[in-house]
Structure formats: structure tokens, C-alpha cells
Length: 355
Image (tube, rainbow, N blue to C red):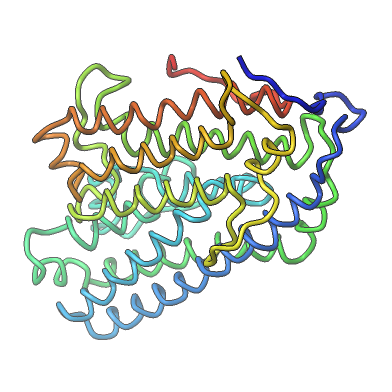
């Protein structure tokens, strides 16, 4: 049972019935978390584009290694913004075009062969983004020298450029929207209706945690929804060493958003956590915000037992993937049921995976 000792806001058009400063929370989210994270992401994509140009000009194992390093840095930066599927990011389906995994290797091979593709089409979302680069930079051939050869063709160079340009263009589109008017619109929409910024962003956050982090990174490859492990569905399938690093970055970003931690800093501001604390929300005699943070730590501790390569983990000992998933799942209940009830927010997406 969840108990709030203050009146919480309802989902009517009358605005919140508590006095928590939702606008201050939106300002913290926009100015100290979302926009700085996008700025960092855009900077990393600029470095990725430069490394792509350098590789195309002088293809070599050394320039391939540099390109791989910049790909990883940008991929990790993407984990910081992936949950913010609101505004322009929602309109252009940023996450779907940037990180649908596994990549469609057969289609990518075809694109390399004939140079005929349209990355604007939704049907090509698994032929682009970071997973497509993962395949090209690590899996398109069996040795580094052969990878260099495969990517040194005119079609190979053009495809690498198209993929990195596409990521850069989408990220800049979203950042420019935030800094040219959407930020103010976001902060001003501080009511408690279903279309308010707080309600929409909280739903987007939950959707990301439940579907992209919990299910996408762990549950699906572990076979939670299929009955059988699917080791080829992991993030970082072809690089075979970064699955856990990407997962850790996403988990850390999810907790940081919950507590309102400023990007690149230990400073915190108004947040979902402080909103729950303002309402003095308890669950079975315990502080709900503290329970959620404790469960983040429990998930992190369980995930520490996983191999860097989740493909190898699923193949060697899938039970550890399932145990890490279970710890993530416990926070789905705390967030989706208890927190949403306390904040009088309704879930606005369809839940179809039986959890």
C-alpha cells in the first residue's frame, strides 16, 4: 500500500492539488540534464564524423581503431539521451533510428554491395544507427585488415558517411529544437493533465526503463518473453565487449534522472525523487523514493556479475542475466504502480509483454 501524507495532483484539467513546484522540476530536467546531455552527445557525434572522414581518406587498421573508439564514445553518450523521447525526439523517432538491435546484417551487406538505400524509411531502422556501425566496424569481416578492405570501397565509404551523418543530423535537430523554443514550451507546460510535460516525460521515462533498458538490454536476449534465450539479440553483438558498458551507462542515466542529478555533476535539483519526498510517500512503512534508489543499487550490484559481452553471458550462464533482469523488474513495480499512483499520473502506453 502506498500512502501520501500530502494531497497529490489528479489528472484533471485543474492542475495539481499539491503545491510542489513542477515548473522548477521541469527547469532542472531541461536546463541541467536534457540539454547538456544532448550537447555532449552532439559533440561526440562531431568527433565520430571526423573519425569517419579520416578513415575514408586514409583507410587503415589504425584509422579503423580510432573510428571504433569514437563510435563507442558516441554510443555511450547516446545512452544519456535515449530516454528523452519527447518533443522533436519523439517526432523523428530518434531512438528507433539510432539504436534498433540487432542490426540487419544481410540488408547492410546488400547496401554495401549496391549502394542503394534510403535511411529515411522506417523499414531501414535496423540498417542504420549504432548497431549498424557495430556490424560494419567489427563484424563485416573476420579480421581487421579485411574489415578495412570491405569499408574502403566507394560504397563502403559512402555508407559509413551516410550513417554518421544521419546520427549527427537527427541529434542536432533535437538539440536545436530544445534550444530554439521547445525548452520554454516544456517548462511552461507544468500542469497535471495527461498532456502536461511532467506527465508525458514521466511516462516516457517509465517506457524507456521498462522497454528499452529492462526488456531490450536484458530481458529479450535472456529469453524472458520468448521462453528461450536469444543471445543474438544483445546490444553490441558484433563488437562482443561493450554490452555491459552500454547497459551500465543506461542504468546510471536512469537513476540520475530519477534523483535529478545534473549532467556531468553530483549536484541534484528537483526531481521525481524530491516530488515523492515532498509528498512524504511511503510504501508499507518505508520511504518510496529511498526504496526506488535502493532497488537501482540492487540491480547495479546484480549486473556487476555479468560478463562484458552479454552474448557470451547468455551462452555461458543465462541465469545471471535473468537474475539481473529480476532486480530491474522490481523497480518497474515501484515506479509504474507506486510512484505513478502517488503522483496521480496515468500510464499512457500499451503494455503488451505480460509484465
